[in-house]
Amino acid sequence: MFERVIGQDLPKEMLRTAIKTNKLSHAYIFHGKAGVGKTTMAVEFAKSILCEHQSACGECRSCKQFYSTSDVQIIRPEKSISVENVREITSEIFLKPFHFPKKIYIITEAEKMTVQAQNALLKVFEEPPSYAVIILVTSNVSLLLPTILSRGTEVRFQPLTIHELKEYFITNNRELPPEEILHQANGSVTEALSLSQSESFLQMKASVQESIFSFLSRKTTGAMLRLYRDFLAYEESIDKLCDLFYTCVYDCTVCDSSLKKNPSATQSVSLPLSTASRIYKELTQLAARLSANAGYALSVLSFLIQVRNHLNQERNF
Image (tube, rainbow, N blue to C red; front, side, top):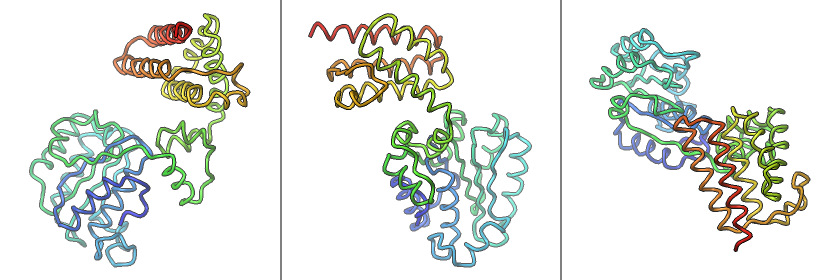
């Protein structure tokens, strides 16, 4: 069961138990970052609920009719989901299933529901028909109303490990991205695919990585300002910049000999673990400030100044 889903052992166990014990919730909320298997799991879960063998076998009558029956609806919105869209869905939910004992609705990108649409769906969540199962799939659970969350069973999906990302590409006969892209993908197949196809990312990475190594090695105002300009130029990729900064610091901490082979490094850089830890803390604080909508330019400049202070303190140890 759930063989098509890579990783996600806890969600698998939770959903497998619900099916085997026949203790299904009327509503599930699958949440986690994009590209970690939420929608695939939702479809496999729905198949398993209806499967005559409770395993999404693909061979029984129920599995073969899965995509052709009106008892299963998979809603993939292109734009926002309006209250009218949800009212249409809810009116159909109260019609008894035609082929199967259950009627299943999967709404992907559920965060696209307007507040009014979520309130309309809430009526079904509060008094659902016994045969209905609704699965909301979202990459931004914070956009769902607390009342929706409180009436559904949350299933949290974790980022994939590097090994699991590799397993996905191998299993699906797709070209395996370079190791550095797998590390930059933050556990997301979607990001790994996007980065693999993006020349602009590779160009940005090469340029910014050189600036980071220059800053870490020279600790000068000039090197800091060069990196600051890179951060301003690639503001839309701030998450990737922070990940790259983390990786560069990690490389300097773990093995300075690797940097000697790196053409982006202007010289060998070796950071004490204590300094690296303080820099990691600054990265975390930068992310928190930006999440709280602090000014981007000022936050980045403050971050770089603090990092330079930590780098300069090395000489005193």
